[in-house]
Image 1 (tube, one colour):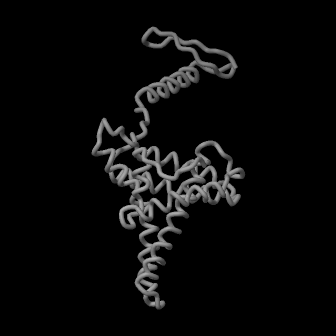
Image 2 (image 1 turned 45 degrees about the vertical axis):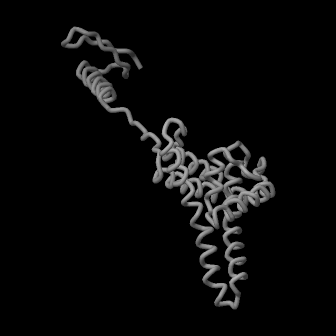
Image 3 (image 1 turned 90 degrees about the horizontal axis):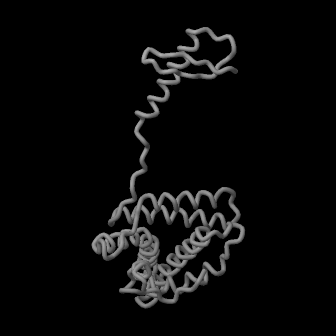
Length: 222
């Protein structure tokens, strides 16, 4: 390879590396191609990633991705290959979708965002409790038995979600999939699930809002 130098019509000197023995026309064509490539790079707009959004619907979408991450965290704890990486991808996608604003900056967006984040977590406990409440009387349960069964089903659904979320948090904090502490995740989920199930007459999700606001009850380090 040798370095060729040629003067352009504008009087500027242009250099390019090429094989020895190249003709002048080949050198000119190579320099022109190089210049066109440089010009297209300058003109090409920079790819900008969309900024995370705030508010109710963005909170819902972000929470949905976190739930998927929690599911992959459970798989990582079970030793499923690639689950740890997929959990990380979902957490990063959640952060790209939703950003929690500071309360003093935008109290409305702060509250609606937290509410939106809670909605996806409400679905499973409500469905579990509702289906149980409908099925229990058909199985001969009385009013008290139905209430206990529905509450228990909602609690178990909540505990399962919190256990998975706690495992996902361990991954986010740097714990490897093979080192995830499942017992701690499950133990921490119990007070979390109790709060979420019993607060405001079976309104799952309240514990999440209270926790985000700084009112954490019965939470332990996981």
